[in-house]
Image (spheres, rainbow, N blue to C red):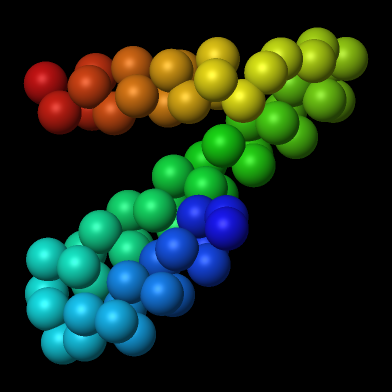
Length: 66
């Protein structure tokens, strides 16, 4: 199950819970951000693992919160 499928499942299983809806939006946004990072790095000829990208996204989110 990928992030998009999980988001869809949560929305259906827990409808109309607003917190779950926010979580689903966050999952989709994070998946889109990770995909964009993969593309950018691919254009530069850099291959990195998913775990590293997840850490980068988490660091970016922390920086945005400050």
